[in-house]
Length: 150
Image (cartoon, rainbow, N blue to C red):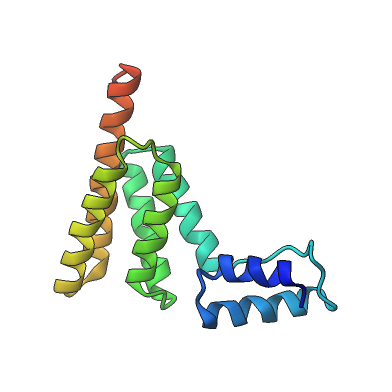
């Protein structure tokens, strides 16, 4: 395996050995012998979490909350651990947010993740985090642009 490809696999898997082995197997099935320019296919659930985060940023409304709730249920039903969903959402939202609200976002995430570990139903805490972020983000957009939607 080329060194450049191995480095990209290590970065894409967040240095998780189990994930990196899965990515290496997928890369081998996709194209063997390996090449340096080979594209890495991320697991479907990671793409699903990233798409969910982009939908959260796209619109902040009760209708969107209902849609996001369904997507969270789908992730949990496919045995994606709630901690992993939380971390994936947080990473995606942090990379897309302005630096002025990143502190608030991390504080909100820490609060709801802690409550999730104490509680019984992770979906409630994931949804509360999403709703809290949507309110914070909408307030930030309105303050920044000076526009208020009715």
